[in-house]
Image 1 (cartoon, rainbow, N blue to C red):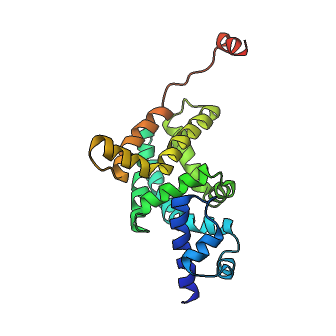
Image 2 (cartoon, rainbow, N blue to C red):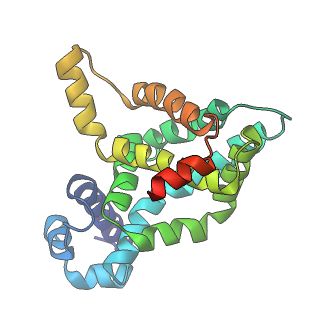
Image 3 (cartoon, helix red, strand yellow):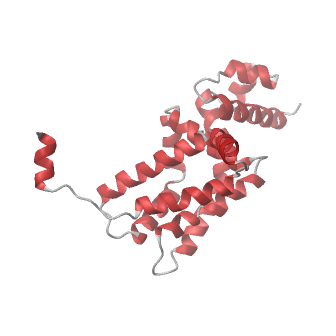
Length: 221
């Protein structure tokens, strides 16, 4: 097996195990055993587990982030747009990940969810550092669609949005199985997005509720 093939095999096996069991509960020993390679091979290609985690996710991010940047730039050519249109601009890049890897959209959603539920701080740092221009463009697009939001409002709403996304991503398989069992039809990633996008859009664009002095006093009491 060539070095290139070995590296790809490690990535494939690690991706599958990370998505199924999470980053914390998947050891390098499990990965090497499943991939039928030795630890030296992992160390040679990636150095450590954190670098391997980033490499697994970056196979998707390298395709996803430039596509998101393109759709957001196209959206920003207009003077006005809605919050739902901002989220809709993410749909095509997300769904296109099915062409990057088999079942790529669901796998990417699962990995991103795992990254937050497993508290992988280094992974969030990696994404913010490497793709800061895309993240900044997304935030500016949100503000353009919702000029009434202060920076503090934006902070909370994006984190509430992230919480909903992380839960949905990490639980997508369970949610689809429950939906099929309870309502009698299968659900794919497109249908999940059909449900998720309007919900998130309405939450971010909701009227701002500021605490009055009386409410603040009551909370302190």
